[in-house]
Length: 345
Ligand code: NAP
View 1 (cartoon, rainbow, N blue to C red):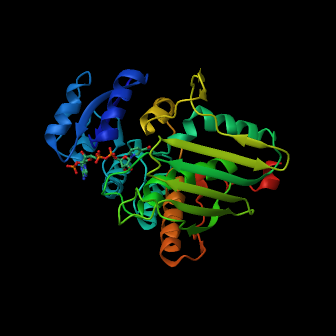
View 2: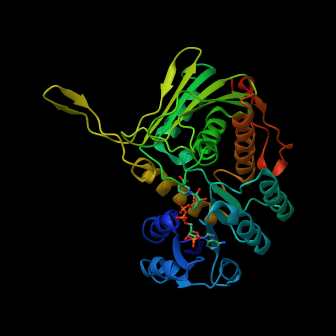
């Protein structure tokens, strides 16, 4: 069966996902596009194999010839479209963030729980990245014993002037928040933010770099360097330190270059180059879950936890104090609470 997908939001990632779902993912075709900007929607529809253009996201969700929905608008519009999709019983893939406040995320969680089945997948694509998946497999197989520490870095060559001091947490490190919960099978209990010497490449309204210190429920310490003006490339790093060894994230296939006086590898230019394969796998997994009739991947609950960590992080940034992450009790629809290290052993 081929699922007819409607995409709301024809901007940067909406265009990319439209091509993926129409041309690379098996089991889906893009049947509809909606965007505030109708011309942009028409432009994206024109590169699919025949998607229609809808006057609004709500018209698209209600259309009988749309089986499943992808939400790629800016964050503040996610909640209304995800709630509308749940209300019609249609599966929905929502780019991160699930919603921009934890209260909005909980409204989605409550609607999904009331519907009685998982309909929502959140676009935390690192869970589908082969490098992170290999790390998780080795950690779960006990290759390094119990994890004790993690060192992460999220470096971008530069950011536009519109990028402000909250965005290293809300837009950038949110990926690390979800990835570390998933890798370690543990919730984040507290966060602190440290501000080192400011880069001269940062705009006057941006504290860059930032160092975030996360503490898991069992006491694993995770430092995250967010450094969005590093100039040299898009560099995502992760090292897990366990009782008996370490695991280091491997970047995608690359060629080792040796020439006179040089032994080096290329650094990806941007997030598309680094995570293109992860997006392909993520959306194929979503298509497979449509066929299975049950959403997989990052859930609404994971989206809620990530936004709750962002909120605590912003409080920590403003106060420079350690802030505990407050989260509601997990509904049974989303499985058991994340395992403690003892449970994994
Ligand atoms: P973008 O280029 O600004 O595109 C968003 C599009 O949605 C724009 O065309 C915008 O129109 C439209 N839009 C905004 N509000 C709408 C509404 N209420 N109804 C219909 N259309 C609406 O943004 P983007 O970079 O593609 O990002 C979109 C989402 O994907 C964000 O949540 C972002 O965080 C996420 N994202 C995730 C990743 C990842 O790695 N997983 C990477 C990139 C982006 P106007 O321009 O006219 O407002």
